Image (cartoon, rainbow, N blue to C red; front, side, top):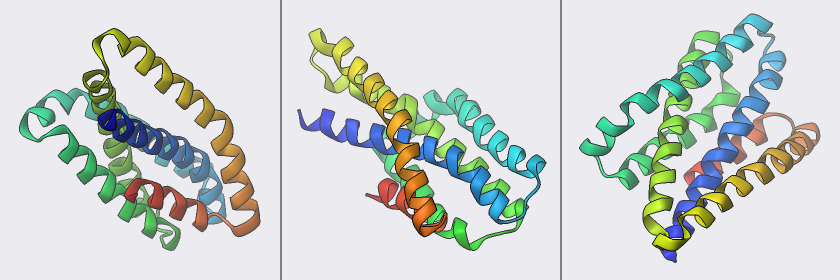
Amino acid sequence: IPALRRSYGIAFATSTSILLFMFVVPLFGVQRALTASWIGTLLAAFSLTMAGVRILTPILTRALAPWRLIIGTLSASGVLLLLVPFLDHALVLLAISAFLGASLGLSSPIILSLLAEASPPERVGEVLGLRVTMVNIIMTGVPLVAGSVGAALGIAPVFWLISLLLLG
């Protein structure tokens, strides 16, 4: 079912991006000589906006079509992630972390809704169960791959991979 394939692709990109960002920010922060407090603040901004934007999701989906919201927010996030390796000012990184949290946090519930809509009525549980399985695989495999890429090539290529995944 084409709509399911598209939704799973976006779910994969979103889940992978969330995990990678939370995995890479502490490494990036240490590389940029940020204090542990600033690194924690960046992650907190990401997490708080990811949770907070979900309150606005119903309002935003009434104003804009779900796919338009997803494509817009993930494209903007992909572009911002291309820039992150070139930045070192903590306040700029804080703003980017907050935007990325909002963007990725907005996409997750919309994707769940789109998966449920695109699935055959008798298969909704299977479709959502497959997404949970995919997320668990991502949580296992992605840090290994990101750590290997980061160790071999540095942190910047990991940010660029996240960016390409979102822009793709």
